[in-house]
Figure 1 (cartoon, rainbow, N blue to C red):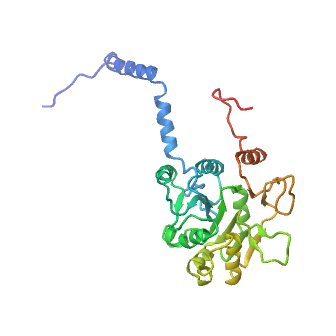
Figure 2: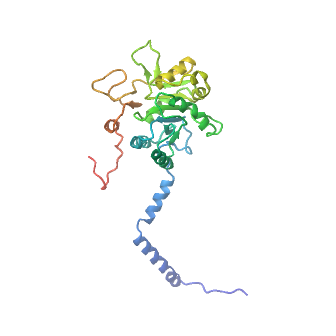
Figure 3: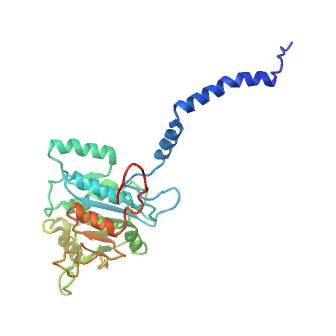
Length: 313
């Protein structure tokens, strides 16, 4: 025999729900920001990396994949912070762009600890197996190490279509850079600012402010005896000599005047001039004032939202 229970009346249901409603009211009154906090945490967990990956790979296939390697020194913490800000604000690209800071072996104990903290927080540093140097083979070690480091990271495809070597005093406008590369060849490409820019009879090479090689050239550098036998010297001209001697880099693209050194009133020439709207890269940003002047010209802070927390004229 089934037990029967009396059907609750509306007044009984109301009496049962009243304590729950009162508890919910008290919770909302005492913790008004709890739901906002939960929403913020959920939103933050869906964001992409601040520096490394500027395109959502789920929604669309990138036009190409580019690795930007910024050759710098371990103790330049303030400069790296500034450069991270400069690139992390450039979003909604049609290309996949990874930005990495590149060192040789870190010998100072304090830098070993502090750089480890950076890696844990940003994961945007490559440490090569070489003595730290400028023109004694660091660029060679950078390019030649990439196939070993990244092969197999993109399935069966090359990990990147293009690889850039640049410095920490160069600012690239990533949208213009991506647009300039979108229809370029994916093989045998050598891209940058052709130097010297005022001597048609010279042996030309792309300025060290920032130049790009297609991935096949990076693989060639990693295995070429022509390259291995000549690694010392001004790195940008040495790279140009590798390609010239190896009859490589035939798809050359000189991006002058969209790439240039920031203006020095006392030195105006073919590679140093005033800002132009279609700029791809500005070089020689040796101090914070030059970075700020550059950001101001390109309206980088126009997106700053008004707030009671600060007042910036």
